[in-house]
Image (spheres, rainbow, N blue to C red):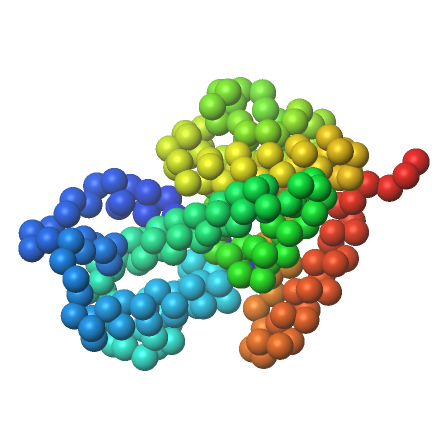
Length: 247
């Protein structure tokens, strides 16, 4: 998983500072007036290419790679997204939203806690969205909660011993400022809590572990059939590792 924090951090500032330009356009590719057919097609190509390139190479991949994959000139990419940070933010927000919807669907359509968690993981891995999550969601490291304000702690995250892997916000305000990321963590936390309370999930498994599974089990291979087979096999193994065992 390759995620470049510098692009995401500057994208937060860029998204907040950039105002809507005259003429009804917006720098992130959305407009109040319909795009021409060719412009809309180019936008779709750029977004699809960005998902593929960033998913394979991380958010550090250059815009030229995105343009090459979209088969458009780099100037076309910059006309829709005036900086790489704006494009990075657009892709990360869309993928975060997609994962949140997948988690909500699993919660609403599966009565059994383990089936709900398993369904979410299989759906999210198949979509490949785990490769495109922003750093504030995937940030994992050794940290202690001491000193973090309450709003910066992960929702549904139970207290864990110091030194254990856990998600850590990029800064105390990072999760609080990004409603999309906070919402994803909240919904996935519900899946984790239900499965744990039902005794079907290992007691030491956390939200961070589940998100790591999504990122780890979404390999990027040149052959689509091989990619699907590898992802399915790896996920089967990881799910077995998450599930509780009789004492």
